[in-house]
Amino acid sequence: MAVSFSLTSLTKNSQFSPSKLKKPTKIFNLLRNPSNFNLGFTSSISKPSPLFVFTKSYSLPRFANKTQKFLPKNPNQIRCLFTGIVEEMGQVKQLGTADHGGFDMTIGAQTVLQDVHLGDSIAVNGTCLTVTEFDNRLGEFKVGIAPETLRKTSLSELEPGSLVNLERAMLPTTRMGGHFVQGHVDGTGEIVAMDPEEDSLWVKVKVNKELLKYVVPKGFIAVDGTSLTVVDVSDEEGCFNFMLVTYTQQHVVIPLKKVGQKVNLEVDILGKYVERLLSSGFLDSIKSN
Image (cartoon, rainbow, N blue to C red):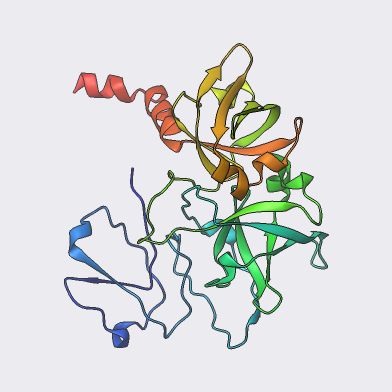
């Protein structure tokens, strides 16, 4: 599986020199020969979002003040990765139709604003969204939400005052504490049971069969952007469950939800790749060779 990175500078077999950085960011595939590349960063231009993959050259504008606004030309060009380790719970301040006709959401936060840049990707309850405006003084940032995102995720259930899981896109140097999470929600599940056992909490989620087939016992799954380990899967009930330890209960939004509410789900992408390869006759082509 190839992972592409877009960084401020990539120089081959040489030390980074800011004077050489004159052109917009270019695309590189580090898996061609990763040992031949050195990574360099400079503070002389706006820092791009970590692990972005650009389909074409793209650069972010610079701003001198702390209150900034930005609307990407085409947010669909941006791709990123998360770990599923929630950094903080933010609070929804405003959401609804904006003057420009789109749907905006303003979220109060602290940790994810420490190094925020316009165009950065932040996972909100596991949904990868683009920062279009932020204000460090007020401690808030704004994201735009597409109609399809509202239809396919549980974000439509949010209201002012709701708490949401937040995670910034990972850096190349980030410790991988969870699993590869794209922030592309596959669908939603419904909480059908929440049962305590000592200081832990069992949570059972019902999901449609098309999504459940990718869920395996002891496998990874992102629930509202939280990287969790599946305990059991029941095809008969159409459910899977997981357990939250005390620390996790105190730092994510899942325990704050009630039975009957929805959660965003993103299954491990490796399962989908394997299914695609098998359905395309991949094994038959190998056998014939």
